[in-house]
Each structure stands twice: as structure tokens, then as C-alpha cells.
Length: 326
Image 1 (spheres, one colour):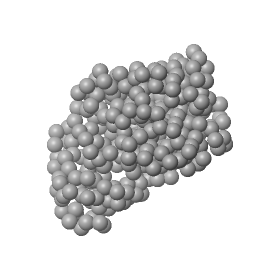
Image 2 (tube, rainbow, N blue to C red):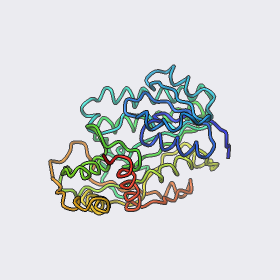
Image 3 (cartoon, rainbow, N blue to C red):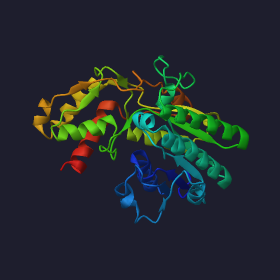
Image 4 (cartoon, one colour):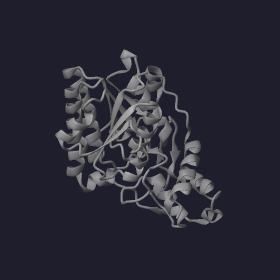
């Protein structure tokens, strides 16, 4: 393994990106972080600034020159930068497209020109769209249900074309509801787990969209780190230029999640057991059920998710209570 290889992590100040920065720095790699701090946080990368192997490039993937500057002298790219959130994309499809499609194309082009060895990018389970088949297998998708889903599917198409046309090595990781330390609980588009954690900690009633029976393949951050490392360094030629589900391979309903959150948080504050949950209208663009098959990742990459949902959620709750309790 190339202990001093340089890895560019776009969106490195975000939730997933900063965890990847942390991990690869701990393994002795040189890490370049490209972020414009539109959704990422400086506090996520501040601990790395004194590390001689860490370089912060403040820039925007919508600017090709920023992409070229960041990828210079890097052998690998982990492309995490994106505007997430289905509701955000419905409210503002143009900006989502600019960042997620034009920005992605800029990073692919800059990586091609820099001669990077491998380009691993964050794809999305939203690509499965209206496909009702469970579990989700990589080669069976439906029609996208949101502008965000369209952008993430276009990423896969562009990566495939660049692999075929320019001989690049690209691997897409379809993330399934990733959660864990550093995930932002604030803002209009906060993910459900950190948002609910913060509301419970404040004794506020969280709102579930629908009856709570929608299910998700909630995936703990350390499983995602494992997949990125496997994708980055696999020597299996059959594993390259592929798309992989990145998930736990299990599903839990939103009601299941709330029960576990109450249980884990009440260890710190028994009053949380009595906080009621409110049920609201179903949200536009939401996929009813999400469950990934991880057989392909297991067969070609040797992926073996170490954290099941309950264990990961317990660790996440402990992190939030320790770091964010006011």
C-alpha cells in the first residue's frame, strides 16, 4: 500500500469527507481537501491543519481552475462534494445541477488531465427511483423521483463515458442513508438522524413524514470509510469501472429508528423517554423502502460491513451527546 500517496478529497470539510480525511491522514497518506464551505464546516477540518500531510484548498468544484489546482500532484480522488438533499433539489434544481453535474464533470476532467490513478465518487441510492424491487441490486434501477436523483445518475453516466473514452479508472459508491459522527444536525435540509437526536435532546417532538413505516438501509460512517478504501486500492481488475451499493444490507423503519434513539438518549437523560413523536404528511420525492444488496461489493471488493444499524446508532448518539449537548 502506498503510504505516502496523495489523495484529493472533495467536500472534505463535510460529514463524510471529513471522516475520510481523518481516516486517511491516520494511515499516513497525504490528503488534499477541496471545499467551498457552503455545507461543510471549518470546524471539521481544523484538527487537521497542523498535520504536515494535510492541505486545505478553499475552492468550488464549479470552477475548473479550482479543480485543477486541487488535483495537482494527487494520485487518487475521492469525490464527495455535492449538494445533497432531495427537498433542496426540488426547491432549487438549477443549483443542484450546477454543483452535482457541472461540478462533477469539472472534477472528472481535471482528474483526467492530471492523470490520476483512480477516481472514486459518491453516488446515491436515490438512483433507484421508483424501482420497487428489494433488495436493490446495482443493475436494476427505476426512474428518478427528484432532481437530486437525476444529478447522481448523470454522474454515473459521465464516469462510465470517461472510463470508456479516456481510459480512466472510476468507481461509484451508491451511499444508502449514511449517518454518524460529524453529521450536521442543523439547517433546513438536515438528515433525519442528527436532526431527531438534537430535537430529542432539547425535549422537542420530532416530525416523521408519513406513518413511520417507510424503511431505510441506514449505513454507519465507518462502513462507508471501509468501502472507499477498498474501492481506492483494489487490485482486482474486474472491480474497477463499476457501481457498488454502499450500505449495511439491512433495513429499519423510521419508527424503529425513533425507538432506538429514545432508548440510547435516555441513558443520558431519562426524560427523553417521554418526548412524543408527531406524524406529518408524506414528503415529495421520498422513496418508500430502501434495502441494498451488498453481494457485488462483497464478491469484487471483499466488503464486509462491520457495523449494524443499532451499534452504529449507539455510537452516533454518544458522539452527539458528548460534542453537541449545550
